[in-house]
Amino acid sequence: MKAAVIDSYKQPMPEIKAVALPKVRPNDVLVKIVAASINPIDLKTKDGGLKMLLKYDMPLILGSDFAGIIVEVGEQVNGFAIGDAVYGRVQKNRIGTFAEYIAVDTGDIALKPKNTTFEEAAAIPLVGLTSYQALHDIMNIQPGQKVLIQGGSGGIGTIAIQIAKHLGAYVATTTSAKNFELVKSLGADYPIDYRTTNFAEVLADYDYVFDTRGGKALEDAFSIVKPGGKVVSISGLPNYRFGQEYGVPLWKKLGFRFVTRNITKLEKQTGASYTFLFMKPSGPQLALLGQLIETGVIKPIIDRVVPFADIEEALTYSQSGRAKGKIILQMTDDSEK
Ligand SMILES: NC(=O)c1ccc[n+]([C@@H]2O[C@H](COP(=O)([O-])OP(=O)(O)OC[C@H]3O[C@@H](n4cnc5c(N)ncnc54)[C@H](OP(=O)(O)O)[C@@H]3O)[C@@H](O)[C@H]2O)c1
Picture 1 (cartoon, rainbow, N blue to C red):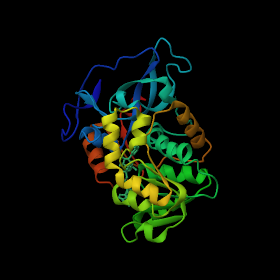
Picture 2 (cartoon, rainbow, N blue to C red):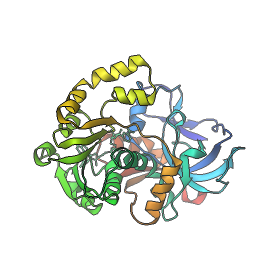
Picture 3 (cartoon, protein in one colour):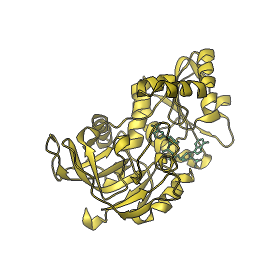
Picture 4 (cartoon, rainbow, N blue to C red):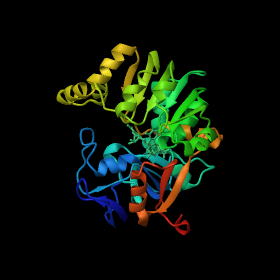
């Protein structure tokens, strides 16, 4: 099959080449991928930026999520059959969706929402699960609570705004002014142009911040959150608590404690808590998100669809940091679906 492969970290761009089909384990299905989405983690993985958390053997096929059609089922598979249209986010140690086929555990997939194209469905798994886990599982947002979502026009932000509104929150979000109409159309109540306004100067008494930026934006988040509130970051640094949950060795946990000492200080000063989230694949949560899509509660937002052959263009655009919603790779011609 054709796949986008790197042979070493920091390779400028993956190369599309012929590789062997993935092996199908007893609980796996083999999926012919119709569409996959680009996520910033693809570039971070390529550059070795996540080596503290994820170390891969080379050569490595990039790509974390997909939508496609089951063409083979493992011997212990129940509940899925050849011909089913599915979508999913693969386990972090089994990535490789920038390819014609992926073998994936059935625990990590769900049936594709009926009212979406494959391209629309591929826009959901990684960002939908991340947002749901932050806003529902960790924050447990209740109607009327206030949340700031950083980067409302991005892959995460466009779905996070919709999920937060579904949970009943009042949503402030940062983006540049050109994207105000987009974020308002998704339900955002208070768009803030991060280029002209520091959110920390205009917001106060928030219940939660969903931080997608890290750095100073993450530190400033503590100044707007109430005592007992929560700052959940997907772009900040992992802390000691995360190391415990993730089961990393003691020396790594101590390293995490050292690099997040400023955050720990802010937690103590403000009475707000910090959680670093590294999202987890989940078929059952994808089924739930699928229901929200089928009932029109949330919808995928796509910036552009790019043919697989032009993956370099898609990754370069993602790297620009200007995407409005998701960038989708079309892995199969319409005639082949
Ligand atoms: N830990 C995890 O499990 C996890 C999971 C998913 C994602 N992430 C991380 O979360 C981050 C966001 O992911 P994404 O998919 O949303 O990225 P993305 O789609 O590439 O984000 C692009 C958006 O960011 C906005 N933006 C750029 N600079 C900004 C700023 N200073 N303030 C506010 N918005 C800004 C841009 O809006 P303008 O064009 O208006 O500037 C653009 O719409 C990435 O770092 C990703 O790696 C982590």
